[in-house]
Length: 171
Image (cartoon, rainbow, N blue to C red; front, top):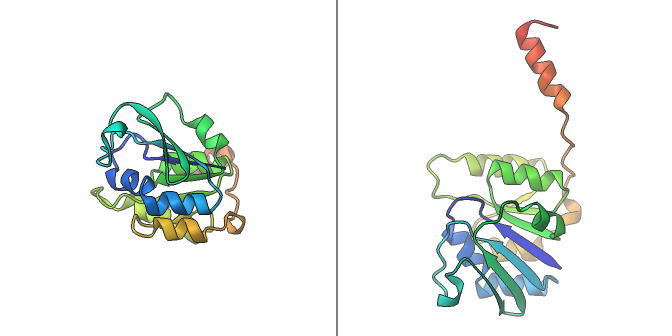
């Protein structure tokens, strides 16, 4: 099974380091994941010289790990993944939820405002995803049950156009 991790275009060193740690990789392996793709963005990896380049593939703690910085799109990786672990960026969350993929989000606590935490919390309350912290990532993966997630509703553009029409006084 494949787990895909993305930090988007930001820098989220703590999530990148956590994902390639022994505790998280061992938990992924024990949960049936034998492959991990990590999109690290601008994050810096302190673990090993071999992980500093633009991309690499390693085998660590029983998991085949592919690491790269950026690609034009992460659509293919999201579609192929059995689990997505992501920063709590709104664009990434919506893309993954619209694909119907199980999603664990880790809000970045270093950001100035608390928008990632607020969004993650709201969507977790609605049952669409699981939110966690860096410290609890391994235990969250171990206890994660995708079957308990509530499917995200499909996009309905008519709601927005109706809202605009109402605001403009057309209806």
